[in-house]
Image 1 (cartoon, helix red, strand yellow):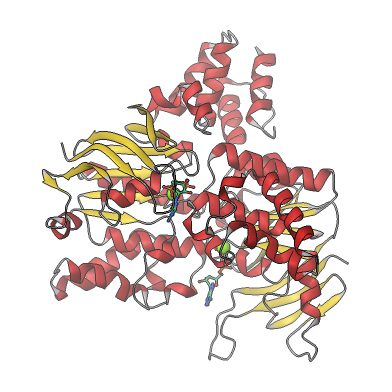
Image 2: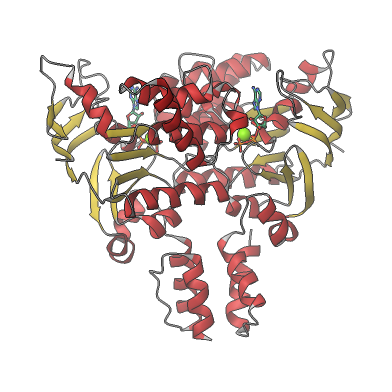
Length: 268
Length: 286
Ligand SMILES: Nc1ncnc2c1ncn2[C@@H]1O[C@H](COP(=O)(O)OP(=O)(O)OP(=O)(O)O)[C@@H](O)[C@H]1O
Ligand SMILES: Nc1ncnc2c1ncn2[C@@H]1O[C@H](COP(=O)(O)OP(=O)(O)OP(=O)(O)O)[C@@H](O)[C@H]1O
Ligand SMILES: [Mg+2]
Ligand SMILES: [Mg+2]
């Protein structure tokens, strides 16, 4: 197992309830997992625990066999990259180029390779023309793509994407999904936090958080067809699945239409 | 009255040689009542820049804007007038972090009414009403806005604008980061503001399902200018080129009914506004 999480409990200072309350799961190398759940369910908190910027009150995290603790944290951070929910929290430098370079320097990438890695990452998200721009001078979607590029350049084994597509235009979203698919093909492990059910539909597995607890963990199609779980979690079915599910419920007979909708929902 | 832009261009650094305009030559009229407008278009096309001209947050580099009877252009002396614009046109930013600044959630939402001269108790009443509308309960009132989740911040920032009680409400990507149920609730709230209180609501979004279900008028921004201003039906049915060039997409109902029509030789209306309507149509068709 690449990621092993056991009984995590986390409480923010001054709060009375736990933001995470006994969370356990394992993730295999090469899996694409969606982490879904209502606003405030604990998704971002969990992602911050996984990369060790918050530390759990109880419970353990192991990444690639290494326990996440002060001693191993730098080793672990080489394996795992996160794109934060708010891209403004990602930027450390005053130009996009320097920002990506900063991450690469931490990984001790040799300077000759640096330039190419930066350009490749920017090209992947269509941001090469903004290479020398200041992060604060970018539009919302541009910021989000620049933040994605700085993580892609580092080529971590595990990528955590915290609502990284929430402000991308439909074309940018499609391009990014294609990048994620190719990363998966290369054997990378992906944890994608999203409120976009079409995006969740593309993953192998969905973990549903509800008030800091995992209430469902299973194959994507099983979870996204679980009406009760989705309703409880303020989620919804992707449109194709919704129509499929409702038509069946209403004893709809036209097989061709049903097949078409199912194909649409289950194609990756 | 309302909002009117006449040949407006905007540059973030007008003094730089060979400056690029974030918006070029935009003309536009928005009524102060009864409009429900979606602004859509490619990332970086100028949408956020455009709406920040609506409440004089930005001043046109070229051309002029007129908001609620007040002219806003580059050279002018009396600046104080712009404050009264903000009372009429409320703007929710794309990033809530730029909007929230008070120490507690309740104070943050009370800020605008206090600023407009309401007494503390009245301001509190207005704020609580707004927080109730968006579904933020009492347990959040004393929390710092910076100790909220992404989606929670977003809805608090929406409540902040509702508490201003403006005539025109402008939302820059109001549903980004909201879970599906909360998203639906927010946009239904916008619909109520528009339909029952006759407010003008303008929202930027990349979500074509919302556009199809809720917008009465659609403005497409591409290449730093307005490329389309009209109905969604006309846009989706007859302007393939614009949809493509502006990096927008079609609503799910449109894509699915089109596919069924083409592959199974049926004749389902492609312009149904919601998935519920499409479901009904399919059940009827059987
Ligand atoms: N810094 C903080 N201090 C105190 N409470 C916090 C803090 N950050 C988050 N919380 C609370 O912890 C809970 C979980 O927050 P988290 O950000 O993990 O939610 P989320 O699932 O990512 O939500 P969203 O979908 O809105 O981004 C929420 O109730 C939130 O109010
Ligand atoms: N503060 C700034 N300084 C300089 N240029 C800027 C600034 N803010 C935005 N721009 C540029 O102006 C253009 C328009 O940006 P704007 O934020 O209006 O786009 P947008 O349509 O809202 O995009 P998105 O959908 O990504 O939010 C972009 O090319 C952007 O890089
Ligand atoms: Mg979050
Ligand atoms: Mg924007």
